[in-house]
Length: 454
Ligand code: GLN
Image (cartoon, rainbow, N blue to C red; front, side, top):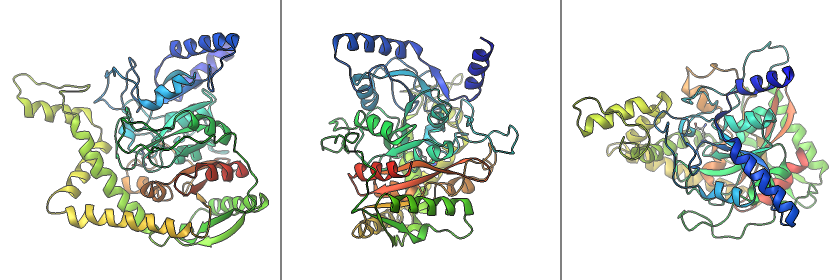
């Protein structure tokens, strides 16, 4: 009992869950028993999963890890979570994240940072970031609190936390998973996807999350392939591209070594490996940090103190005062920074200089990938330029934090499927992830290359 209590305390110390919903998971387990007896087991019958607290869940508080939505209980279910329940899964709870999914370390959450279960080999007990924004998902899976969880990825939020914690995660092609019922950050980039221990579990989860939804205007009207059944680590006849622009000067030698080891693994699996060029790579991060805040500033205008969650109505105040008080109180510093940047780049005097320019860059980046995919099937690169960093290490310097997304945002801007799989441990004993980027709609190619590495 002592060991159990210590485990529970240790699990709680990770701060991975904002709300626990054991009854939901138990109901699914009971339904699974009944289904088994009746011979009608579903693909995820009884599987207890974690739900990133960015997905609206009917009757269960949904906060986006913000004070703004504290106490907000949706009366509807997101399409993705509904599909998972229809497939038999149950919910253990709502997982912590960076506030409104803005961040790379889970430190912007109103409900406190999440801690990774990993420690540096000689680092004592110094706490490490689980990555972000899906840091509750990554920490919970890495700590074996749940076998799988949902994530969302706008500019790396599935892939980077997966890499930081030694698990797998895939962001499918933009439009594969419905955005309906997911708290919006940057709508042209937001995409849901699974995080799990391995590639196969990701494939199973994704099959039960994806699919056309008329309630999302950008939903892809394509059948959902049977990715799990077609998993194969035999890459004979496949060509893997290595983008030379991702070989950054001064990058951690452990990252380069992992990348080279990954190349060797794919060759062993039968793939042909070629160098490719994605010439506009260096403009991806600045373009992302214009486009994402621009869309965020528009999406977050809805939090006005009238419709959702928090309302600060000072004595004798008018409507404008209520908006101002609610927004000043409800949004954290990083969210405010994004709103300020977003409204600035969208303002009449600067729109062409920043927003229009960033959209043009986005097109060039998408074109880079199109041209590269003329000579390869998938692209292999690191997921992030570093292993997990310490809590607090980058919080004072937003640019240093944004730089951690450098390898993740190009695929987001191009809407391409991309996955992170654990590939090595660095000298400090921390996991590093490799990223596989695929052609639009080719999640299978991505998963298969991932399978050859894990
Ligand atoms: N770290 C990136 C950001 O802060 C990506 C976040 C995400 O993908 N939700 O915008």
